[in-house]
Length: 372
Length: 240
Image (tube, rainbow over all chains, first blue to last red; front, top):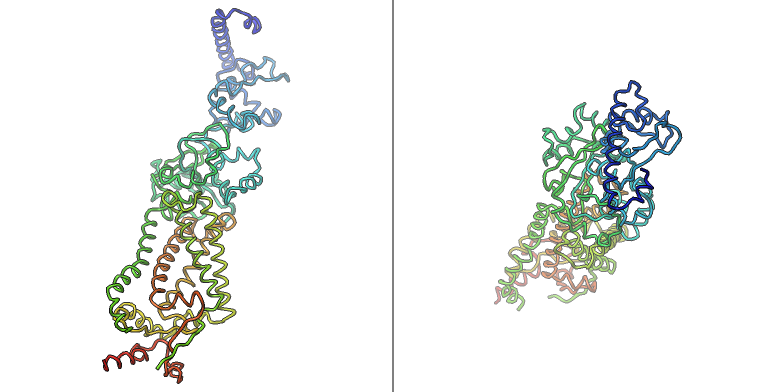
């Protein structure tokens, strides 16, 4: 029964026919999968129906840049860390012809087939009219927001939005726009979220000095600095997957070329991109107060190119000086101990007017007598 | 015997500088409070306005400070003499002035010090202004300039130990300036300081000894018992 015939069939029969078709498809896919797994020639695995070990079989050619055109190349290692690698190549490229590669079009699944909610959200946003999912995400490289450092989120946006142009456009109303754009993920302002946290990541001076241009530190260089141990051991000295205030102080004191940058990041990433008027009001972030500043994570690079989130002690970024010396948000990250010292200094200044003024009032007759 | 004499204590550029500074610093304190405590201080309707006014006032006060330095150092060439306490100030002047403020003033005794255009400040004023004008003001201005240009001056901020260090310094120095301001305004009410800062001139009583040239040879901070007013007062008491 062809698709056209199915469309013409009475509605009552449609569900039953679809069920039969799915069953046949699944059985045939399983059959092909078994055959492919047993096949002696690994190159044969590209063909339709491959399921068991399908990724390896496809990547035998598609993982080699010399074998396939550039658009069809898939980086073996980077693809391996994506969620898509777990469901396998055939989940999206299901109906590859038996004669592949024969120059014919390889079918592609729609992202919305699985990501229904995200697609619905995205359709309501500003980007929907501009580009599709793969305008921002390469399905063979895509990572969840938890596996990205804050700066990498912005790299996705900079594919279309030129950094200099954006700085100039935002600078029309946003003070220190370059600083804001460098120290905030775009999605903090351009998507809605119920809650926020502080995402920190390790940056390294490009020339190994303390004052060089700072770039996100990679896994291999950090591993080298850690003396071959796990990268996280640079900060998490007692290896308990939790970074305390003391550990952060120690890191900032001992590591000269490494520093921690922090970004106020939405707790859940929405795909509805919009221009939110309340973000033009500085108090949205700058009066967010110590509540938002309580939760923070450090994004530590992993061997596979992703990042691991390590939780940090509550309220660490609110420390006065050396726990997060490069993270400061006016109005939000004020330290209570410093406020108290400031108040004490002002009170010292009031000793003279209040104390002296009081005795001056009591002894006013002495001065009047002398004048007479 | 004594007669009234007018002396020109505060030249016009100094008075302009002083009142620009006063207005600027009060603006900086109010906007600074809103910037640090936006949840409790809301003088300006928007946070952005508070930041912009703070930045403009900061630049005006910094430029005004530079003019002050240039005027006293280069034009009048009296910066060191006016603001640097000398040996006599450190040995006796400071203690004498302190005793005057803490005891003698309450007993109705005259001040051990009278301002002249060449010696405008008493030893305590000199020491306080030395700290304020040569330490507090330049540091608060420098940290403010760093915070105003975080991206271009990133290396300098790193050299100071990070943005948190700069912010903490800026805040604590500003609190110290507020403390100074309270004392400064109060002490201005203790002597004839406000009128000369408004019109430039001050009416002082000139004594016969001063007219005869005694004052010219007497140190400005001589003990109060040597001061003509005090001697006259004691004489009156004895007669009374």
